[in-house]
Image (cartoon, rainbow, N blue to C red; front, side):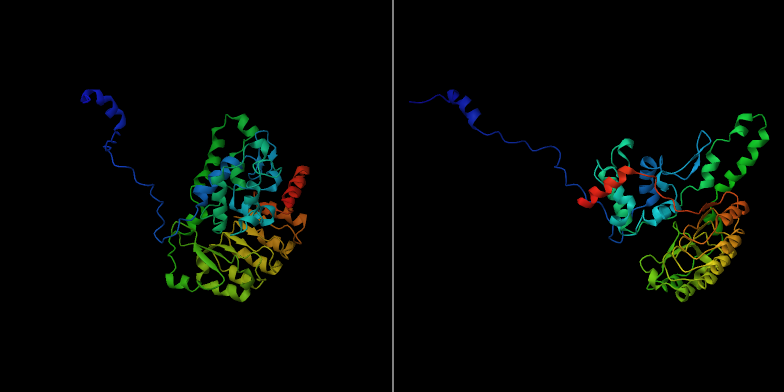
Length: 377
């Protein structure tokens, strides 16, 4: 018996698979991988552009340089930890905030990576949630790469003071002439010291810098193509003594930052340092340098920051440093410097910040519990 074709049509429409139409647009490609830097390596973390914004948003409210508050009282950083300047970060907690290339030994990283319910976690629970994982990873990567600050130095104590309310003077008003002196420092601030010092200074020949490639010193530009140099010996401090430091003589005119912490230098090394006319910062922490050597640093008239923590420095050296009128930060705790010498220096250099005692953390009963919990994990 013949079945009419029309009676089969519904069955055919159901049983016959419908062919997918070819899309008008091609299928999207897979996500393109991030391009590496020209040398094949990922770009290094930029502290000023990537790390500082994190600290500024989440940490500075409690960890900024001591300065007068709206009520006129000095607001001190919590736990003595200062995060709004390079010097604060590198010296707070006796320099243990950052351990170059060792994030697990760096308090800055370990405190932000603790569990959310840990009493020692930063930011504290009462201040908000933990930092996002991507920000924690970025800080960790920055430390793994060596914790370089580039040209960033942060805000100094005297800068903070300028931002503070003027008190009675501000309330009095009426005398417009009083505003004029305040404008002069602002004009000077437009030109940072390193900008002024590098004017007319020609970069050193590449061949000269190449001589330090295999030595104990890490010699690099301050950044942005500056002819000024940052010299350090991190990781090889045991190889740096007075003799090794003399090898820096050919580049002495270009050194702006010198980091010799925990090296084997003594007073004799300061003769080489004294021949660095553009030196802005010197770190001599826990070295054998004493009064005789430190007194020679008075020849470095551009010095802003001097770290003498744990050295043999005494009152004689303090008297000599009184001639450094540009001095901003001086660290002399765990030295033989007396309180009287500190007072006299502050009179000689008004506005200079002299750290005479260790900036110990505030008493935290809860902190001990947090430490015990970490030990048990």
